[in-house]
Length: 383
Ligand SMILES: *Cc1c(COP(=O)(O)O)cnc(C)c1O
Image (tube, rainbow, N blue to C red; front, side):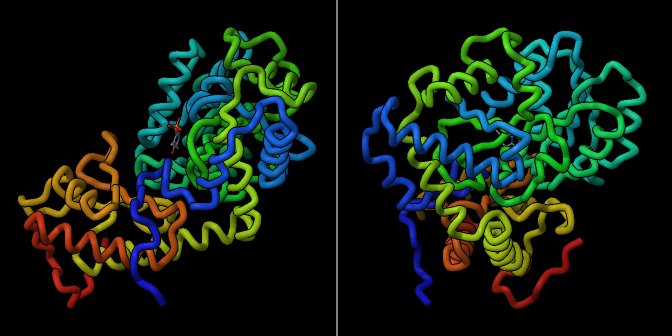
């Protein structure tokens, strides 16, 4: 098997990421936003994403210009009525961001601040709801990319159903690799990105919303461009987006959906990521690295490593040495300082991970970092 690089540039951030060549090529044609091809692709994306979360009957898939965060803000402004109150479950950087979006959108917000681990549990959520009976909605990240934990959205949905509280999920980083049943969990909204586990390019926000709630929201959103009800009904009626759509991004996403289906869907995709993750994590552990998280709470789409203790190490010089090798890694978030992160999603296979691992070791040597288990002679037990 060929062990060399399959790409001349690897973008290992937790999205945007290394996009397959076929997907990139889909963007080379200029399409008419009102033409049958673009309209057909928009419809194909909506149908496919709804099928992935069993939402075809109960839910609507709204496409919106912008990054995933635009979809989150649009969801809050469109779906939470006057007098509503949002509980934001925070156990990492992106939970903090959900709170900031809600506050900026002038949504009445209650924050449930939790540590990264142990994962949010039923008692935490129930206590927060008991303490504030005005809460009508709750939102939580599924994959908290700031650290890489997989939060229990099924539990949240169950508590929400019991209490009559509507549940929104930031599945921005997990959709396409983790199956979530929108109908069975009766989710109010799922926020989705094209440029994470769907492996496409940035530029469109995706909100999968409960159809009845979306229809009830007519005229509610205090924004012209973020009104999901209007965007969706207009597209249903005319096939068109309300304003100029990112046609190139849409064509890439349509191809990405086909590739996702060809791979076998979310399960096989996560299996590939897990194999990538294992090559990387096992390889770096043999060199003495430790991961921030215990394996049983980690979603294998990114790996977060504690910085080496050698004083010669700085993320800046490591990043630069990697970049010279055509590989871009990512720093830890403010909520988890002293770490660096490596995304393993995108057009990556085990072969790529072996290449990346070898380059990491070379780069560390180049910047003068001695690793505890250098040479890989001894495998280090992690706690
Ligand atoms: C990437 C990410 C976002 C933000 O997406 P943008 O495309 O930057 O708007 C939100 N939530 C999570 C969990 C993410 O990983």
